[in-house]
Amino acid sequence: MNKLVFRGTVILTASALIIKILSAVYRLPYQNLAGDVGFYVYQQAYPFFALAGVMGGFGFPVILSKLAAEKTDVKGQAVIFKTAAMMLGAVGGLLFLTLFLGAPSLADWMGDPRLAPLFRLTGLIFLVMPMLALLRGYFQGVHYWMLPTGVSQVAEQTVRVTLILGLSFYLFSIGAGPYAFGSAAVFGSAVAPYVAAVILLFFYMKRPRVVRAKWRSVRLDGKVAWRLLAEGLAYTLTALSVVFFQFSDVISLVPLLTHAGVSEAKALKGIYDRAYPLIQMGMTFSTALTAAMIPVVAKITHQKDEAELRRNIQQALRWVILLGGAQSVGLFSIIKPLNIMLFKNGDGTLALGIMALSVVFASLVTIGSGLLQSLGLTFHPVLYVLAAFLLKLVLNIWLVPKMEIMGAALATLVGLSFLTILVVTKIRRHLATTLFTVKEWMALVISLAGLWLAVFVWIHGTSIIFDFESGERGQAAVVALSSVALGVVVYGFSVLKLGLVTIEDVKRLRGHHT
Image (tube, rainbow, N blue to C red; front, side, top):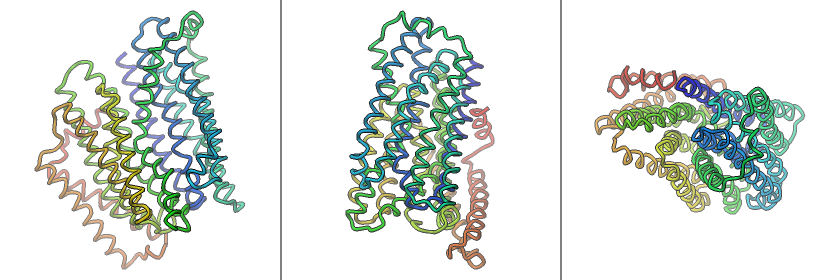
């Protein structure tokens, strides 16, 4: 059993890492091809894809596998999966109908009626979501077999990226408009989950189907249905904490900008959306570490070894703060040449810089929420996320009319900071632990300040040679990438010299991934 859990952890960690990288990277060429308005169109639909993806890939499979693992008899497992099939089918069908029938109203609410066909197409994902969740939960809970989940998720993301970029290159060659690009991206995202379903069915046909043989002889269980729904949605909503902030911008930013008299509200929203690929790339480490840490924490919790539990969680959060803080300050420092390098111009640089500072908070929220649920505090992160979402929305309403996308960026930074405080404080109180001493906090501030200063001097010094501000992407790339290399060296030397990181810390970190 331990070998199976270990192997499964490695598979899911690797697949999570691949998916996160693909998810962040494909947006860059897509934005270059589709332009700011085309990018805006796709980003308006993205939160719905994310919801379906997490429901079918994480939220419901996790609780399904947990319920199945609690039953040692085939009949008990059959009750769980028969109940899950009915309940998930109802949830998926309801969400499909909501999007399909409510698409015009939703599009009008967002201030863009042309989005309605895209929302209808998005709804198709919720029809296949129940099958994805059911099969992944079955493999993980009955057979302790993570390979089908990992393979299907990577294949799904690969198909999505291939279709989106392939269709975008074609549309670019014929000079298509931004909504055509958006439709192509939505189409690729809608088709990909069906490919994952085919792969999962292939694996399913290769395994003995003893649970299914008992389905006809068992009845539905209302308690199982309620637990699956409540805990599955809790895991889903928590995993979507950062997407909730994106969703608040989806529903409010264009209407608020339009009401404030901004003529190019959609293009401005597309410029603002450039920040999300940067945040996602910055969160890659925390996503992989979360996938690796959750089963470790669950195992230690079961063994009731509080000292070991405290040490592991403390180390994980310390690493996220150390690396996430460096990524936030580093991205902020190089945001202008990076913006030109990746997106062709420097539009919205200041707002993107403020959003870049959110990376450390988004990373802490990601791992912190997962750890809280592993500790048995399933619903606390959900309440925290909903509170932060409301705060973000209120701040948008207050700040966007005055400061446009700068206001939205500040609202995101404040909202994620607030959410981070709630999550980390709960973990510290639950475990009665601290993350850094006062001396270590001061050392961290010095290291981050040194990183910023070194990059600041380097960028302004090289501006004599490289005129990247004129929009030359090649020169901007040289400045941005050389700044990254310099920042890594300066920050790495600083944290080692000041004792924030030791060789033992590195060995323990590697231990979570090997």
